[in-house]
Amino acid sequence: MRTLSSELRREKMIGFVPTMGFLHGGHLSLVDRAVSLSDIVVVSIFVNPEQFGPSEDFLTYPRDFGRDRRLLEEKGADIVFYPETEDIYPPGYSTYVEVEGFDTTLCGARRPGHMRGVATICMKLFNIVKPHLAVFGEKDYQQAVMIKKMVSDMNLDMEIVTSPTVREEDGLAVSSRNRYLNEEERRDAAVLYRALLLGKKLIEGGEDNVDEVVGAMEKMIEEKKTARIEYIEVVNSENLKLTERIDRPVLLALSVHFGGARLIDNIIAVPEDAT
Amino acid sequence: MRTLSSELRREKMIGFVPTMGFLHGGHLSLVDRAVSLSDIVVVSIFVNPEQFGPSEDFLTYPRDFGRDRRLLEEKGADIVFYPETEDIYPPGYSTYVEVEGFDTTLCGARRPGHMRGVATICMKLFNIVKPHLAVFGEKDYQQAVMIKKMVSDMNLDMEIVTSPTVREEDGLAVSSRNRYLNEEERRDAAVLYRALLLGKKLIEGGEDNVDEVVGAMEKMIEEKKTARIEYIEVVNSENLKLTERIDRPVLLALSVHFGGARLIDNIIAVPEDAT
Image 1 (cartoon, rainbow over the protein chains, first blue to last red):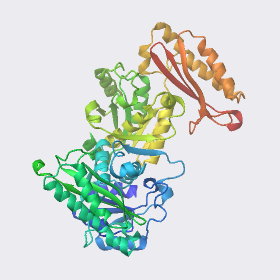
Image 2: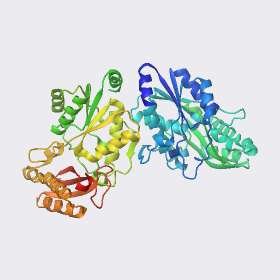
Image 3: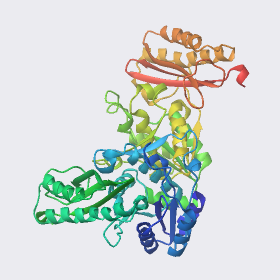
Image 4: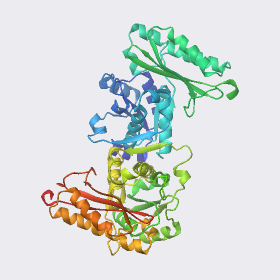
């Protein structure tokens, strides 16, 4: 892959979409974006063990390479990079990339080692695929902000492009983990986007108290009996630091368990006096 | 520099020698090596604050860009990359590369953060200079082994070449820090290489007990009244792990203070039955 990329990069603009496979409409929208911005589109499929905690769903994470490959062909991706775990992390592997400051809020604070695992695999894949640009989804907002920071700090010769979250008709963000939901949980999960819209509306209507906003969202989500909230946080939308009063653009982000599925989602809210 | 490197890399083999400046015969031998192996030779001069501890000599580390530049021109280097500290570490900088397992022996164990600082600056410089190969001196043996491991783990498209330590007539390894020595310390410092040769001779004569080898070297060095030993260690020459019995090739490495100068040196010893 690296040899091929070196050749291609001489003449062509390479766009890259790193994924963990089991592709859905969200991934495919990233591929569309990459196709529109580049000459050659590379999509990687690699379920990265380094970004899963010991009690998380690495082993059960859904996989279906045959289906992924067909979908990517239809979408006009040129190359699917599908490495083996042992090729990416051979025995004795020991080098990690850490972007400091991302382990105190949102998913970084709840999943020790997750952010380091994501930074490390992205650096490795960037070095192999040598893209001019890589496309990340805004659903994993914290990840996208961290990778942008890593690319800038590490002087990588590429750009990070982000693309909006794709949603089902009832507002649920599409995710490979939605397949873990039973019928009731699936129905209940639609509350997440409604709660985000509520928080956004409160903030854009003048509410500047974080506790009020989070409390209202919590109340709405807790009405669903299959929901178990992990976090609802309001952070500065640029540096993802916790904010006390809402006086500039913020990210409302949440993680909620429904049965065996941990779902995340987020939205940007801009208070009136900050626009 | 990165734009220039991208252009050059299409047609030319780029060799790279990263340095902290105040060049001496050791650096210049690395440049010779790079010139012999590549079409274009880039030398960086950057005193990297991230690899100095708070009580170390970052501020007093010798600098003389004018002289360095002349020497490099004479040697046939093509490009001198001489960035400002603020360009390499702008405000808010927060991304680090860590190669695990290098902080338990040798300099890694005595200089907290040093190895991380070296890995991080090398990754950044490699991303900017985009070399096909980089040349490191064997005097900083641990550094060279770590960077090789980083390049392999991080899938960087380049090779690390190492080049032998250059010595003064009395055996002292040339180093920018030798200029900290007064006349007496300079004379005493020649004991380091003699102690390394003694250790090597013992091992190659059949001594397999680490304590015996280290004890003999210690005794020789302690005869010099300006010497203050920081460490003398015998480690596996491949993975730099501490060894108990000497039954395979080892690295004898030491760090000794003479006045305000902390000097390091090393030698490889191969026991008879391991050859």
